[in-house]
Image (cartoon, rainbow, N blue to C red; front, top):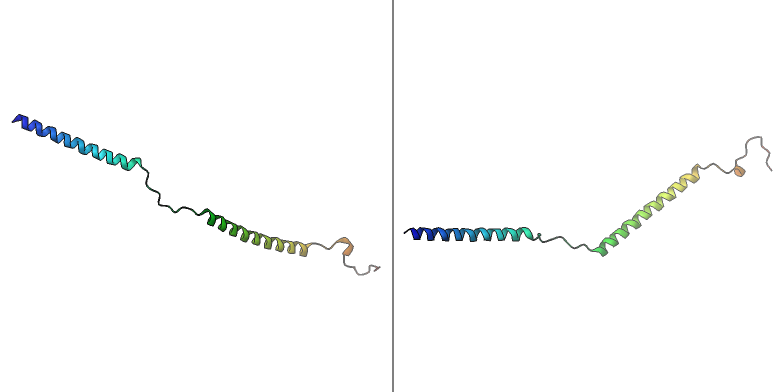
Length: 93
């Protein structure tokens, strides 16, 4: 009868070893492979087109700013020396 108990213990250990090995293999498989990337593939052509549109809009705004600054500069600039307005009492040529 002791042989039957020893045999049963052997098979329990064998089954427990197989289950442990299977669990380790499943864990290794899950941890060794990176998760799949489900991200959208970027469309470089659309990105480039969007960037060009943004640059055109920025250039237009900068050109408008430059025009406004030129107008301010021209309006605040003193007149040249040869075109100064005549003062009272000055002789006119």
